[in-house]
Amino acid sequence: MTHQQMATELLTHPAALGRALGYEDFRDDLHGKWITDIVTRDDDMTLQAHRGSFKTTCLCVAIALMMVFEREKNMIFLRKTDSDVMEVIKNIQRIMASDVFQAIYKALTGERLEIIRSTGSELTTSAYVAPRGAAQLLGIGIGGSLTGKHADIIITDDIVNLKDRTSHAERERTKAVYQELQNVRNPGGRIINTGTPWHKEDAFSLMPEPELYDCYSTGMLDEAQIAKLRQSMSPSLFAANYELRHIAIENALFLTPPVFTKDCDSLRDGVAHIDAAYGGEDYTAFTCGKRQGDTLYMYGRMWHGHVDTVLDAIIADCQRLKCGPIMCESNADKSFLAKEIIAKGFKARPYTEHENKYLKIAEYLRKWWGNIVWLEGTDREYLTQIMDYTEDAEHDDAPDSASCICRWYDRRKGQAYVSPFGG
Image (cartoon, rainbow, N blue to C red; front, side, top):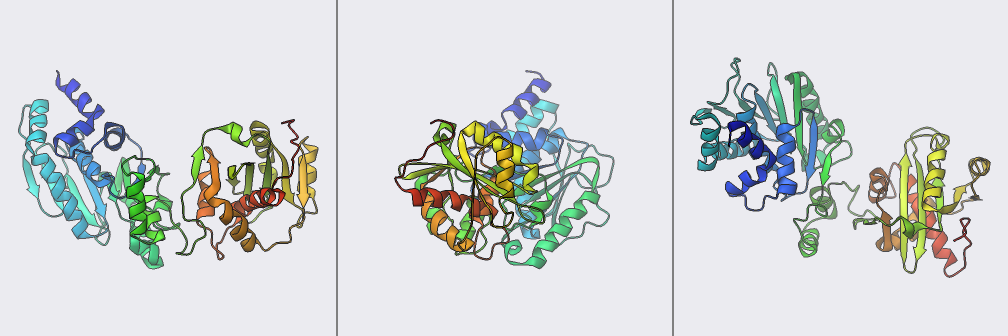
């Protein structure tokens, strides 16, 4: 095997290296992908994964590989505190000094990999060929100074934590540090981010759209383990650490995660609802639903914009799923939206809303929540708005629309319904 073939094999199956280093739970389809993406991509990226998923361990392996394959580049690594930084730097050095890694480097280069400089915050090896005087890998806590520093590759790991959830000042401090990194990276450089979210307005709001791996998708935790973890901590702590979401307060209405199906036919001959926005900060939320026995199958979408701009997309979804008519409140617009829907050749059902919004959501959507199955493709933002909903929530468009579907089926009970699609 040539050196090039060996390098290709190593980057194609990096989880095997992890297992050889003693990380026996590394999987090719999960941890191998994370390491490969970190090492080989040339764009900025954000990886969010639940606690105990070996996210930081994968990052350590990836950094060790980059120090070998990106020999001319220097790196800056940031964590929340200096002690957090020292822990990771020490682990990277241990990986590079291991017999397995030394043997790989020897096979690739014919040389022994030497540690030239190692402190709690710096690591430089004999693989480094950059002409600049900067350390190959420099670790900094987010309270440290970035003035005058530059790097080709910048890595942040868990720079957002519980402090960012509870303190506005801490969130702003972390965001300021992240914004400063834009001036620290060299032209053509990249920023790699890993961690878990803690607040809607934390530093992740400034980062690229994350690749999400929650406790339900990785397959690393079974139902019993998830249940035990859920019981061992507060709902907000579990949501942040394992579901990669934030809930507003401990008494949020919707705490159990949504369940999904791929079967579009489960919604056939259902009904639809629009919670319309006519400008400002509100969202237009759209929901389709169909009751089958004690189960409600639902689908939701949400847009930050005027309902007129998304009405064609809404009607197309109704036709695709064969759901109708579209219910829409007539209080504010005097049935204008219903007339627009009818003018586009679709059936509408305007109604006058009399119920308090919070009580409606608490009564109907909360009652049905454990019996709702969501169609895959439902907007993540739509479900997040429901999961974050409380009486004091800033936005309530998605839970309001979903609760109207629940109320419609709850009140009809066993009454017959004639579908406009002939079903």
